[in-house]
Image (tube, one colour):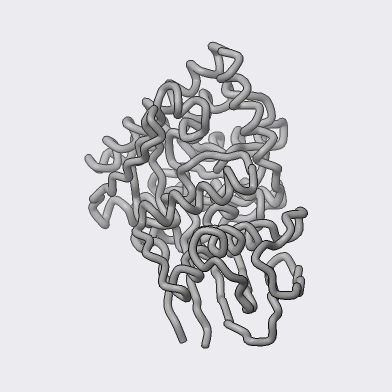
Length: 340
């Protein structure tokens, strides 16, 4: 028997960073994101040999343990261990024997929410296997707690909810730690045009997002007004993006992205660098009307809005930087699990 799951990665279109504590706890945050046809996958094969095997196929890492109710967190496939430890602690109350295999369509540190999406996929597979009574909000919240509280990995709240719910969502993060996911009903022709015009470009670099996020959080704690004002503007940007998409005012997308990018760079150091700035400048010079780095910043994927047929000129101009444009589609489905 195989228990399988997959959860989609996401593009953060607006409001990025306002879902990170303490900003979201003090002021409330708002994010607009959309899931795409790139996924994190998990497969559980139950065993009866008293062993636990963890196999990260894309990382080429595989570890075997004797069956235990708690696996050591030691920087070796900690996301996989963290989900198992929490499931056993809160639900099963006894050790399990199995092989868990995972794969992600994008590398770590690429800015598409890979780590959180992988946690959701793994948790979904366990939930399918042992019949955990988890709704979508429960699943996303538990995934958040595993990553942010149990494993103490810095980051926000949006990725777990995007991976679980799927689709285009306007998410609100209130001061009492409540999350509301508002699915947006956007006409298909607008989404098709958006995916055509929005170039997803991988810089062939990655970054440790936790360092940037920790610095961003510290700026809020120390009441850095430049950083806080930038986050206020990013929260407003998510509302601007929501209205533009719902009304089909796609020509505004570029300038809204650029507005967000100029403010995002004010949140903390490390979000951009000379290499990223040169890529952005080249895209604009060749017809893009705006763009941003995906995720916390510092590397990974960038997106550029290229109206009409400008995408081809922009993609060609960016070839000199050694990266690659990635084809994708927007997807409406979130976490999906099944048994074979």
